[in-house]
Each structure stands twice: as structure tokens, then as C-alpha cells.
Image (cartoon, rainbow over all chains, first blue to last red; front, side, top):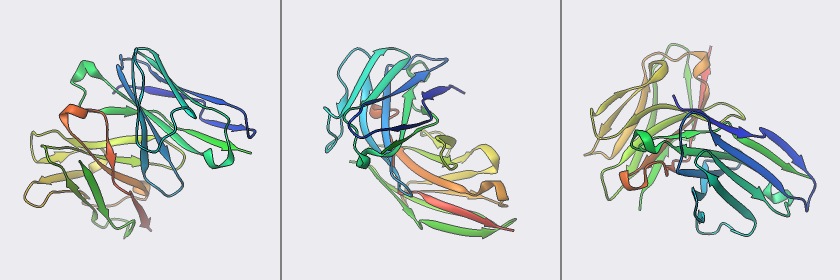
Length: 117
Length: 114
């Protein structure tokens, strides 16, 4: 199956700093990628849809200036958490749609555990 | 709008017993339905998917699910539970126009007792 690599898997940062998370499709081109946030013992909440070469589409209630998304190539999307605060601590997961196979399935990265101290 | 409801946030079964995880969906268009499994601190792994072909879908690790339009359900089953099946399971819905954009249920934690 298609592989999506997410990096880093775990990061600890100080309050007020910014953190960048990368999501790469390794063996397919992904015109669309998705970013989810997962709280402990909770389901995945879609944050935004990342489209290659255009602005991301954010879900209602998600601060676009805080969660910056860039999808500069067909294999890479990045999520930057700006001026991070402890309440941003969470598990962030990306997924990528393989447009070459009809796009009915999204493949998930391994997730990034962000801890803001 | 689409939505998914998973009945039971926690299910406990004995090893070798039947596993049944319930999922009901709501969709105004023909849905695509998915079951994912998540182990602690990991991403999601696809177990199986329904995309308007056969209503009985077989997946990995012995899991299967049946799409029942009349009941708007897509329950996940496995005849005999293994200890390694203990994990969090998510049902998700999408539609063709949003291929890849998933709406998830609340998740069901499966425990397997020896």
C-alpha cells in the first residue's frame, strides 16, 4: 500500500515557540492532504484540507493563523503550530489522498505527539 | 452533512470470542465507509473499506463488515478475537466528491481478555 511518512514522531517545545510537522507521501503523488488533531481518548478532528499549490481550507473553529499549512509540492505538506501553548499539546495526524487510484482512500502518517511545556 | 456514530466507547471480549463493533452512519449521498485500527501513539491502519461494490467486505486480520443501507449500518466483526486485536477502532464515512476527507466516529476501544 501507499506510504505516508510524518516527521517528527514526537516533539517537545517551549511555550511561545513554533513547531513544524512534515507529512510526505513516499510512493505516490498527493494533490490533497488532510491534517487531523486527536485528543487523548478522543476521535480525530479534521483541522484542514491541504491542496497542492493553493491555500488550505480550514474547518470551522480552527485558527488559520495559528496552524499554518503549506503544500508546496505533490509529496509534501507541512503544518506549523505558531506560538505554541500548552493547550496545543496533542497528537497530530496527516493523511494523503492518492489521486492516481481514484482517491477513494486516504493513507495516514504515523502521527506526531506534540507536548508544549 | 455526513456523520458516524459508534455505539459503545469500550467493548471487552474474551480471547476466541466474537468481536462486534457497531457503526451507524448518516449521509445524504451514497457513502464510502471505512474501518481503521489505531494502536497507542500510532497512526491509523485501514482494516477495510466499502466503496459501493460488494456489501460484505473482507479486510485484514480476519475482520469483515457488512454494509446495510436499510439500517444505515456498517458493523465490524471478527469470528475469534486475538489478544493482538486490542486497540482503538474507528469507523469513518466519506463520499466520492470528498474522497479522502473522512468524518470519524468517536472510536471504540476493544479489550481482549485471556
